[in-house]
Length: 220
Image (tube, rainbow, N blue to C red; front, side, top):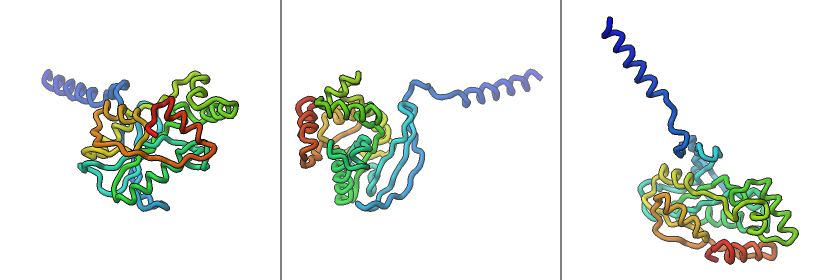
């Protein structure tokens, strides 16, 4: 009888251990779904991820075979509804996304991580509020600081975990932003080199690009 009770107790303890949730303070990024994505730029795959840090749905756009490959072309692109969808001329986000897709198609291989970090992490509504301050004469950095935010609130730990899942051996990062290089390298992502992604300025975004260069250290 005692042996039966001991076995039952052991099984109960095993069950309890299995049911215990993961450490809520530990970053967890999980693959959610993968699908084909034919586009005007070429045929890609789209991979959706869930995470327990910002609880936003981030996606990877994939071209070709990237697993265990070295020097895979990669762009970390922060969501910009106004630029990516509505074609805003106040920034260079839409043209950068289009150029990145074109580069992946030309190379036949690559990754774009589309991160839901609107307005450098301040969110869409605050971004529109920052736009209104820019209409009054502030630049992008001044507007963010005026609203009580840092000039750039983005974090690249979730992006790094997405790359770990996709498993390229190393990447070539398409960016003008040294913070992306630093953020990914600190998270343990091997980066072979950086390649610029430059867009011809227009009358509406010239000051925006100058602010990126002079205040945010972008390599333009």
